[in-house]
Image (tube, rainbow, N blue to C red):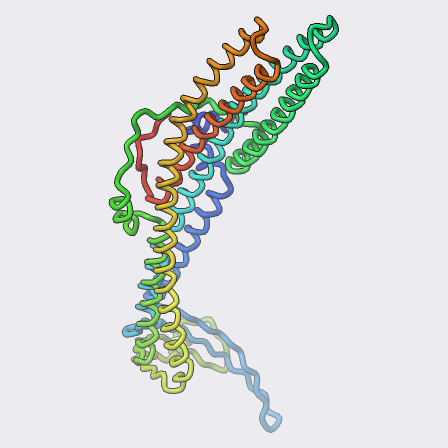
Length: 413
């Protein structure tokens, strides 16, 4: 499906197709993916420090003494293998933890992209509905204005009624312009997230949720630390800081490594195996390195690592408080929007019936033009409130699912 969408300029997309396309073309997703792949390369680079290191050197030295000039060719090749180097061992463990943190960050970025994509998609669906409603309202306003002008010409309508019709018509034009702006804003946001230039027309419609059950808030809070991406990341960063502090203490211990190599030294360079053998010395042994003269830097490393650990502890607590606050506010906002959705649905049905009755009564001369236009305006406002509440419900539901790192409610299409 994605290959088909990429090869053909398809502008009608469902939500699932939009998500698949975003995970294929979106620059936000690929930027996060490349950052994660870069951190994985850095981990392997750190891990390679456990392997032997091979070094080689070749030089020519020309010396003059008492008018005599001599030339010396020298070269060496050696292999060094760390045996006991806690700096290397700890750096590998820290790099592994950092890789895990970056993997969670990559997952969090992908989840945030999907959340933004869903929000833009739902906003676009809402804007399209508002645009259609505004067009219908403008058409009815134009018809009413023509009818009123015709009555005014015949003397059956007053100038006040004619002005009221014009005001209603101008208000409908303003509502249409506002709906177009909302549609363009949502359209541009969705195009930016998908990494495309053509306009997107959503094929999914937002249906009214039936009997949605809300899990207890306490049960969601108990899951928060285990599933929330931000809390996972702050926990891993705290673990990395703790490992850095441990590594700073281990830096006071000596380092042990094994070396093995050959050194060549001659006053002439002859490409002969026996010549190289006769002028080559074998070297091997064990190197002990004591950080006696590095105490100043080691002490400051310990102090900085300790403060970094304390800082990460406070960041972890702050992230927990902020995430719990976001969960509570999103949860209660979702319940409020759900209740508002039920009420606006009833209000819309009542406004539709009232508009029909008002139209019939105005035709019979029972009510005034102002009452009739008021019923028309109430109908448009009810449609706006209903479609906005419907899109808000799906947006808040997606936000709650993002905070919990999983799908909390069954997806309703």
